[in-house]
Image (cartoon, rainbow, N blue to C red; front, side, top):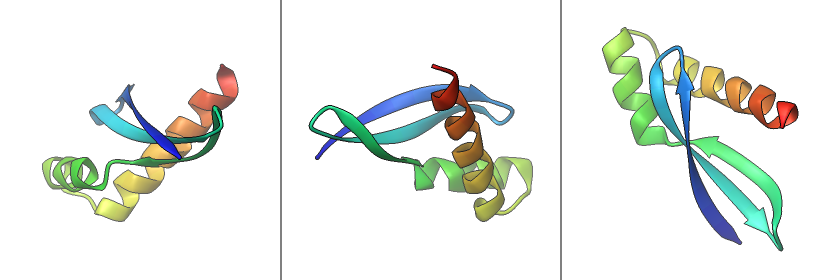
Length: 65
């Protein structure tokens, strides 16, 4: 499985998303957890909230391309 990093612009600013490919097909994605922790601290919110928001944002982004 290959991993690629995608930088996206969100309401929190730029965030890194890890994309996982198997034989060239996207099979999974997840926000970078360490960045989620930093974002959460800066916005005074939970890591879980940031992580979920970023997952939703990426899901919508990927469906639009």
